[in-house]
Amino acid sequence: MGALGNASRGIHAQVTAMVAHYLSDSGLPVEPRPYKSTHGMKLSEALAVELDDDLGGDLRGLDDAYAIVSSRGDRYRLSTDLARARVGADVAGKRTAVVVQWRGGQPVSEAFAVLSLADLTRLLGGNPPAP
Image 1 (tube, rainbow, N blue to C red):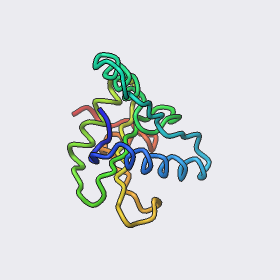
Image 2 (cartoon, helix red, strand yellow; image 1 turned 30 degrees about the vertical axis):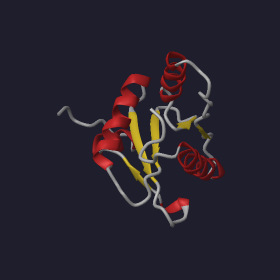
Image 3 (cartoon, one colour; image 1 turned 90 degrees about the vertical axis):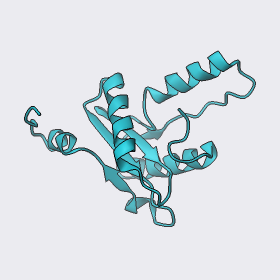
């Protein structure tokens, strides 16, 4: 699926690495998604690499959370991004879906972490009521 919100895969990879390093420096076993070059591959091979990479989200090592990073800067599409994270979490078998929204020009510690109220309830140890 490529870079979420940013046409430059390189910028997205750098922002994802900054977020992963911040979390790792905070004591969490997080690593950035490995980006593999698809240059020179057949289309079917390149799509297989993309699909395989997307199954783990942008931040690896989170036990039961699927996290994607939006490198969109200050143009937010939180509802769309959170829906995409929820689908990724469901496919990957993870209970919690999180979007980390990078805020261009701000320290990485000021990025937004967005999740649904149901996921926040689970994260805090509760059991959300059925819809």
